[in-house]
Image (cartoon, rainbow, N blue to C red; front, side):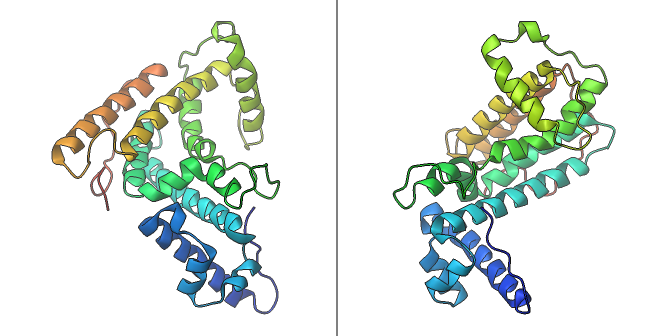
Length: 267
């Protein structure tokens, strides 16, 4: 559930306080992790009494939910900038740029990544209530970020990339793929005749991407402050890009525009 939007004559001041509260929550998240983001800490930081925050958030679950949305919006903006930096007619370069930006951003925002990956569990369970709360819909972080790859995959399909026929996909996967395609039809311009095999390929690549990214963020690939570990990670990501391109029958692009600053490491 998004925070209540202020209206009326005092809308500007109320909006400024809401922005300050979200900025405070982000600072606390970066410095102390999810456990450090509390109503009391944010209220103290912005200089109001804790009960005053209830005008903007439905308690700590609402605060975490709003912070989650703030984080995912920032990540998506970074990913879109990385995609837009690549040649418009080169989906392979766009894929490369998006993957590298995901790794770069998430490795420099580890606590934010933790919130994105575990946000639904943490938010629903904060006050001892483990039941689904209709005020807070599921936080579909992976789906939203994965949407950055949709125009890339569509460009490959429209150019004739091979896809697995429906009758060669495991039957237990078909209902999920059909539901995903139905949901995507709500996106303006999404072709209704997209084959399930294209979505299947996207899911395979998503699993590989998020698997390596999660292992890396949580330190299982090495300390990326170490130059040797950075070189190792760079090689792993290059292999990941090559694997993703291969799933769609594509080759690496020679026209990739490098990101500004280091790909990996802590900010």
